[in-house]
Image 1 (cartoon, rainbow, N blue to C red):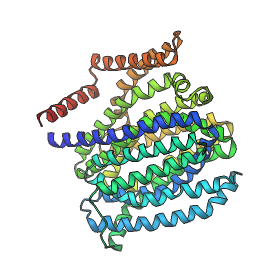
Image 2 (image 1 turned 90 degrees about the vertical axis):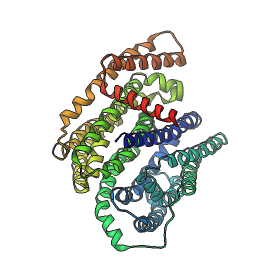
Image 3 (image 1 turned 135 degrees about the vertical axis):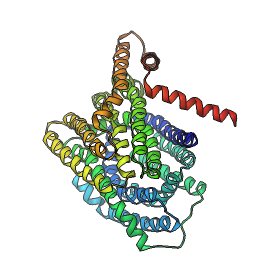
Image 4 (image 1 turned 180 degrees about the vertical axis):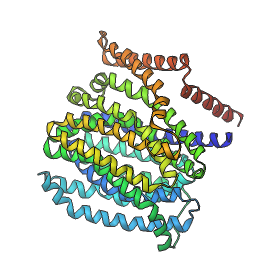
Length: 483
């Protein structure tokens, strides 16, 4: 058991380092590019990315998860899905190439056509990378992700900044995204030993598809629903409004994606190995919810209360209109680990049918809220997302009251101490901005004070998540020292 816990922690560390390294570089690059480029350029890329995200679901969702969840997946399964994905990606790229003028006409911006056609090449790259990613996740080889992702991010960062300085405008963002995906895929292909065999089984594909299509449909619903706000903002309002909305989401999402994707990529394969033991899955779900929310809370609350200082310091005052959106998204993303843990438990138990039903229910509720608020401005749409997210959290947790005997109220009770402490910390650091100090010193004091309050409070009130993290970290460091 201790060995298994150490292995999980080791893989989490590698996955977390990979996300932090990549997102850290991306964070710096986004700041540089935001200073060099106008908000309207970010709005243009945001519109194109919406359609790519929808297409990407057909590659990333369903079949990859089916390979991870299947107990005895072998080379035939992986090779079959690999060739299937290549065909799907090629079809999707051709589709995006020919509908580019339609999309551009819808938004009355013909300059979108070449951007869509070039940026859509990312779909073909994803077709090559996707199964390698599933192989790494299934076999818990997360160190491979670290080198691949970081390599792609750094090369893309250098190219993107150079092109922005040279005045390439929106094409700097296009080149950055494509290069990142290409280098990432190349390094992963070199470092991961698996190669597709010359085999293809329609029977295996059918079996995997029976599980995967529900996750595919769920993922498609989720992406279309989440990106629908951006499509509506792009159509009803201005590209600048869309840029401020997206940039307000960018900072909290940056942190959440690091922590949440690290946990998400490890939880599913680990839970799937214990899918016949409901008690074990419940314990893992509970631990994931406690730990992830404990880690996420200070980041989100700290960012919300320091948002004006952060934006002014990093992006300059031309981006101040994104501050209210940042605060809303910080609260929204605070609860994302609860979504992730509950949904992974359902997927690991093999209930992809239930997963799909939950997605349909959440989207019906969310769309009703969205369509009733979209006419009242972009801010109203942001608040509607917060309300939808809170309701979705309840919906996601509901089935696990029966499957795992772990109710939503129990989950809230588990995370409440950390959230209350984080809110108290946020209120304390908020008042620092009123001191007659420059932005750099203000932010530095806020960060140090916030860390002292949160860590000190965790120790004072003996929060379980804090004690667990300390004990596991000590054990891991001791084990590494003995080596």
